[in-house]
Structures are given as structure tokens and as C-alpha cells.
Length: 465
Image 1 (cartoon, rainbow, N blue to C red):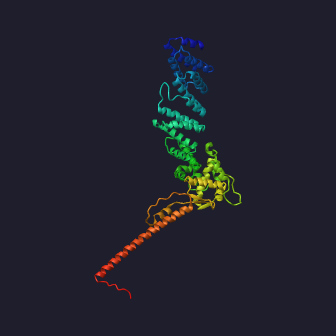
Image 2 (tube, rainbow, N blue to C red):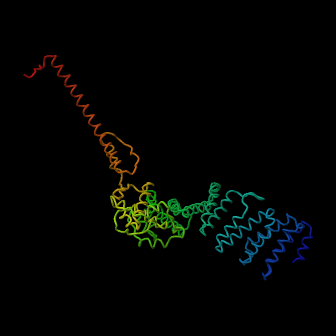
Image 3 (cartoon, helix red, strand yellow):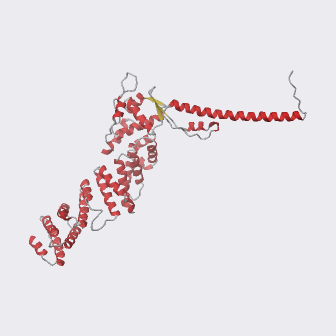
């Protein structure tokens, strides 16, 4: 082999390329492939590192080697992987001169690693490709495909943090293509990034949208619909989640899902028991069962029992432990507001399997965030739930006042009651003023008529004796 390479190096420059390419084909065509990797390594090292060969011939030979490896001439996947990795390592010191060939080899190596389900390794190989500089500028649409592929590979190994970095790069280039496949892959990555980032409402909406796309296989669409239901269940309880749940509940396809039972109970505001969520919990992915931490202030407020009773609390838990745990507790709290007018801290704690203080803390946060309508009575240790405002609005229009804008809800029941009384009194006062004015006008008109009749002698006024 060394003798042949020296002989080829001494050939005229115009004949070197063809001679090296023919030698590559001879080496790869051997029936005994034991020494193929070593001979290809020697040939590549000679072509790349010997100045007598030249850059033009080196690029020509490497381009042909890359083409042959990409065509799958080498059937042995292990040998092909070795050849690609060894060629990349040999070219590495002079990567600037052979940037285009290195990029193609990296794409081939990523394909091999993806077939072996080495997701993170494949992503790292693609990260090493040079996209922003080189002998030939890469189009934005091609860069977008690479970034989306990296995101998809990283998410397979649940590396959501690094995946989000490349997703942000892809988002800047998504306008550069009209390719449906690339756009669908980007939207799927978008939904999965939201899922891993615990933006469950956004993820549910995107999964549900993708489940209607006809270009996606039926099995994949069913999987996305199930993912949409899962994310909707895990989302924070409140009006926004209720809208997403309503959209999924009205989708006839959800009837066939194993998660339909919990979907229907959440949509109908039924209280969930611990036994009912065990089967659902088994379907969740590790990131959806992540532990959540409680702030020191919330832990301090939740640990103390705000009731004066000497009876011990039913639970010692000071807060939810997982994302699912928090979603179920918040749902049960919202569902209880549909059943009760008010509930004690201790009663709510028993319902949510929390200490009374933790139950009060959860209710307070939901009220502050506008996800629960009500107020807290610290004196009587009660949480009061508020219904719709239709009755209040009707009262606001009484007495001719028309539409009255609601004042800011401060959460103080007595202040609100006082404001309502002032509003009703103002309405009554205005009605009284209008009635007095009418009576005064009538009196003036009657007096004017009597005076006119008296002047005409038609009526005589006699004073009483």
C-alpha cells in the first residue's frame, strides 16, 4: 500500500486524482474487509497531509470517498461507521481546507448514530457542522433543517435545556422555507419544548392543532391528541385551562383515548380522588412527574395550623410534591367552588390532603392570579366562593344608572358589601329626585290653571270661616 501511494504521488498532477480514486474503489471492493479501514486511513492521510498531492487533488479524492460512503457501497454498517469516524479524525487538523467534505461526513455519521438510537451523540455531531462560514454558504432553509433535527434528537434524550437553545435559532429562520415537512417538524418541536418547559396550556393547544394535520400518520395524530389531553390535565386550573378542556372534550376522537375518563371529570368539574389518578400517572413521562419545590415563605405559612381547634389536622403535607399533584389539587379546589358557598381551612385541607395552612395558601395564590373567584375570611377561618356576576350587573342597571363598571375587587367582603349599598342607594336617590321634580311640575301647572280660571270669574276662592 505504501509503495502504491508513493508511486501515485509521483504522477503528474492531472493523473493523481484518477489514480487515488481508482485505488479507493479497489480497497472497498475487497471480499476480505479486514484491512480496509487501515488502508483507507493511510490513503486519506497521504492525500490530506502530503504537500506533493495538493489541495485540489485532495478535495477531489475526498469528495469521491464521501460520495461512495454515502451511496452505501459498504454494506457493513460497523465498518462504514469506522471509516467515517476515522476520516473525520484524519481531516480534523486541516478542517478549514476541507470544510464541505467534513460537513457531509458529519451528516452521514449523524444518520448512522440515529439509526443506532444514539440520539445525543448524533446531535453533538450535527452541532459540529459549520453552517455560517465555509467554501459555500448554506441557505437559511438548510440551516433550519439542521437546527430542527438537532432539537428533535436532543428531545429524544430529554435534554430540553440545550434543545431550547437550538429551537430559538430555528425560530429565527422558520420564515425561510415553505417545506411542509420541515414546518411540521418545527411545530412538533415547538409543542414538545413547551411540554418540557411546563408550559402545558401552550403545549396542549399545539398538540391538538397538529392532531388535525392530514399529512401526519393516523397513529401519530392519535399520539398527539393523547399528548394534548395529558398536557391539558397538567395545566394550572383556571379559565384558560377550562377552554382547552372544552375543546378537547368536544373532540369526538378523545372518546377512544384511555385518558378520556379523567378528561371528562376535569371538564365537568368533578372532584378527583387519589385512586382515580393512579392509572393516569402511569402514562406520564419522567419530566411530567418532576418534583416541585415550595418557597420558604409558603412552607412557613403552610406548616402552621391557622385554626384554633386542638384537634390535629387530617394531613401533614404542606404542599404538592409533583406537577400532577399540584394540577389535581388545584382542580379539586376549583371544583369545590362549584359545590360549596364557603368552606373552612380545615375542611379544604381534608379535601386536598393538605394542612389547613397549605390549603389556605393554595387558595390565596389562585385568587391572586385570577384563577379562582372568592375571598378569604381570616377571622372565621373561611374561604368564600363567588359565583357569576350576572346578578350584580342587573343591580347595576336598576334605577336608570345604566352600565356601571365594577370596581377593583380588593378581596374584602365588607368593603364590597358597602360599595353595593352605596350603588343601590344612589339609584334610589336618583329615582326619588326624579319623582319630586315631576310632582313639582304638576303642582305649578295646577296653580297656573286655577289662577287663570279665577281671573275669568269662573271660579271663586273663599277662605274657610
